[in-house]
Image (tube, rainbow, N blue to C red; front, side, top):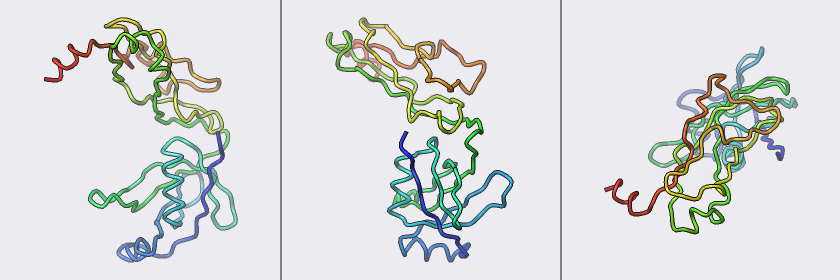
Length: 195
């Protein structure tokens, strides 16, 4: 996993004054968690957007604030619902040895090589994300799951088919292993179901 870092500056503006920052291309944020007090911060809009898009809510970020480096993950991202501009980010401090619980994307692989796809069948993903726990260094960017063994209509992949990387566990100790991740459908049957 590539290291993601973001330089933050301390922020003194609060409330309505924060709008002035946004107009200047600066995003307000807060860094909280651990034993330290929450810190109001700000960062360059373009750099922050890159970090938000790359890290999402599961990849650790090295924050540089007040000449100190802190490891954090993004807890909340606030976008303007109309203009879709980034308005605020909340970072949660973590330690290298903390066990982090987070949601990661399930990424289906080998879709074009599967017998089902070659036969003209449709593979539909039913579950997009799953909650896992691991130390920051072990957190995967996504969980990859091959559809190579899917051949016939009605074939499916479940949580039991996921092979977690070393140091990673399902967040729920009682995880339902029969939960369906992907199904194979006949295109006609899928179209009829949609109508």
